[in-house]
Amino acid sequence: MISKKSKKRGLGRGLSALMADVSEAETVSDTDALNRADRTVPVEMIAPNPDQPRRSFDQEALNGLAASIREKGIIQPLIVRPNPNLVGNFEIVAGERRWRAAQIAQLHEVPVVVREFDDIEVLEIAIIENIQRADLNPVEEAAGFNQLMEKFGHTQDKLATALGKSRSYIANAVRLLTLPEEVQGYLRDGRLSTGHARALITAEDPAVLAREVIKKGLSVRETEKLAKSGSGNIFVDSQKPKESSKSVKDADTKALEGDLSANLGMKVALNHSAGEESGQLVISYETLDQLDDLCRILSVSR
Image 1 (cartoon, one colour):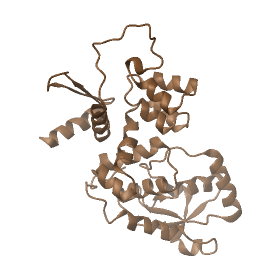
Image 2 (cartoon, one colour):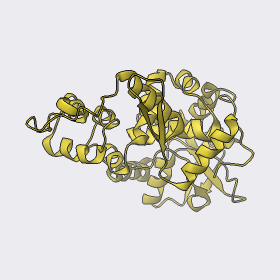
Image 3 (cartoon, one colour):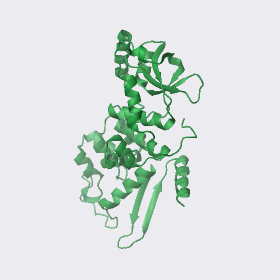
Image 4 (tube, helix red, strand yellow):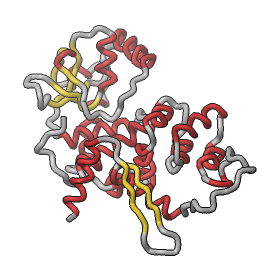
């Protein structure tokens, strides 16, 4: 749970400083791991971070890590902080895989390093640790970026600088969250690549097209053609008359829709009246929580 006293700010005392704390504790040898740990803690007194962006853990990989732990023990201590919701217990900052594998290996206690991190620092570390190790799938990574922006007010530019990514990388990643849950599921399990998913973002029905892409094994380029309307759609019957009344949006309009969607975390459509300066901005929300967020954003802007 995010502490109520957490407030919007820059990137705190610096992501490099936060990661230095983690690296110092984790880069230890087998012989001095327990000496470098602050203490050992029963596994049942440790809980995962509820805002950890990583949601999927490969069971086979966990079993392999558990086998290694049975033989050699835990070489790298877990990084934890006092649990803000349960006195005397701890919350994982880094090392959830080790904690899960330790339970499979039936260890009763694990070595830990205790640090006083606030909620924002914990989330920043969790995201960066996973990104640096390429441990997040595209949807998890996008959700992590979105958390930093929505909950803590970080901008795409600040994230890009701190993470060593381009702003377009951050923006394109967050846009994946505008896809239907079904399509995000295909992306999580690897049936669709990030390139395929990006091509489907502007499609009228991404889920239907995603199934077609998977069924036919289409390439990213073919998927881009499939997502286009009118004659560009390779599955449109060429014998059917074209709908001249429906205009195709230009690249700038689609890019603006994408930027607005990424910033709001909701699907945005720009419908511009041809030859005029007027048009419509349509924001679609999926839950009442999203509607509340939108109302709050509009209220602050007044």
